Image (cartoon, rainbow, N blue to C red):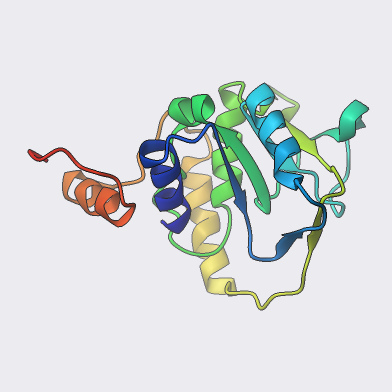
Length: 186
């Protein structure tokens, strides 16, 4: 819900061109690191960090790596892509898998990657050597991970726009929490 509130505020209230979601276990290591991330999101719709622990399918020019593994540690998404794919599925309420479902849904729509039957997902991931992992205390536990894995399997084949709320009452609450100005009659 926190990531979705951020997305709502940035795209609906602040009207930014690109949002970059950076997890708490990652930190920038170079000045102006966000410039390259913003540019790749504008070009591809979305871009994802090619975490060094994941195998690489293809390494290309300009630090572009094609792979079928995702990480939620750094995700940049353009305004145009956001308005096509929507929010992270609100059924993800705890630790894990929310980024994988969101990125898979994007790839199915040709945003930040592609989906090919039989081969799976291929993502436009990047390693600009401007980010690094840092040690943090994990907030997840096995029960949370198992529960969120079940949600992931339930929505694995979903495509298209998703709202960040579950019903009209939750919509009003969510937008208020996000700092989005609501029309008077809502």
